Length: 216
Image: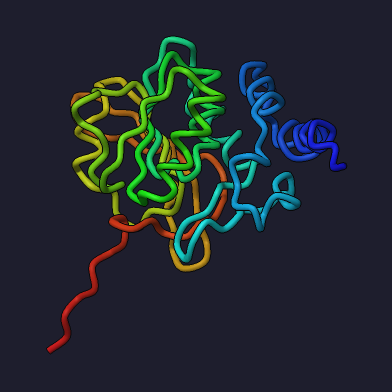
């Protein structure tokens, strides 16, 4: 029988801590949330590997290192209301829920959302699941102290930055071809100021692609 608890500790000790993530709430959350339950059945044995795990053609569960470093760079704390875009089966939301006051998780795939609802009901009691387009966010429950986008971005819809509180933070993996950079944005007087955080990659999410230019 697979010892997932041991794999979880190894994941934290070999992927998260060596990436300069030392904040106790993040470490504790990643040690407690059973990642193997929040991935597709075909990926269970790879749940604690240091890779993105595929949910569908353009959707992944972010690798543990990337998620942990995003939460560390955002400075998510116990008073925050966090918007989690592209929650998938709910792993990221379950982790954030152990750090923040509450999470609004957005998922547009109804199949993924149904599974996420069941899993989050067992493992996180402070997550509200919103089913709708990822790029639309969940304005009715905002504004938010922090926004996390669980995938790549080529363009960032105004609908999301509009849902961020002034003084709030947003994390995006900006993709340029196969290469990506995580940037943290601070909303100050209605405008977003960006800072480079680290390198990571993920497929660009639906609704976050650059529009194709017409050629004549």
